[in-house]
Structures are given as structure tokens and as C-alpha cells.
View 1 (cartoon, rainbow, N blue to C red):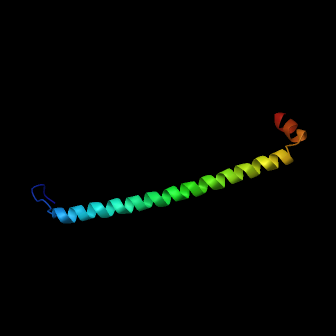
View 2 (view 1 turned 90 degrees about the vertical axis):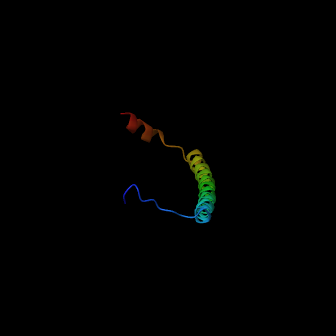
View 3 (view 1 turned 60 degrees about the vertical axis):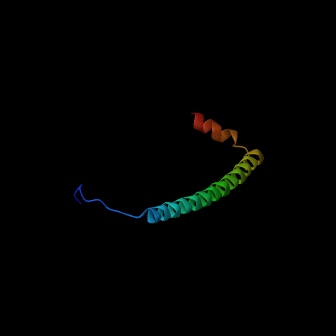
Length: 69
């Protein structure tokens, strides 16, 4: 498209497009924040389970010795 040809759109249409985009982005942010919160909760549960298992069954000394050699 040549530089001297301009595309025109009414202010009302432009405003509507911007509002729709803003609404869509805000909704996407809400969904992503919910996913982040869910992942954080799951990560904390997994961390607790790992720490519990490591406490109940710590690595044996023979495993540590073989890795040092």
C-alpha cells in the first residue's frame, strides 16, 4: 500500500476495538493468575510430600559414598 493512501476507521469503531481487546486481555490475565495460583498450591503440596519422604527415608550412606568416589 502506498504511503499516501491512508486507511480510515471511525472513532467509535476504534474505541470498540480497543475496549474489546482490553476486556479480552483482562480475562486472559484472570485465567492465567488462577493457573499460577493453582500451580503454586500444587508445588507446595509436592514440596511437602518430598520433604516428608526424605525425612522418613533419608538417602543411605552407601549411596552418598559411591557418588563421592
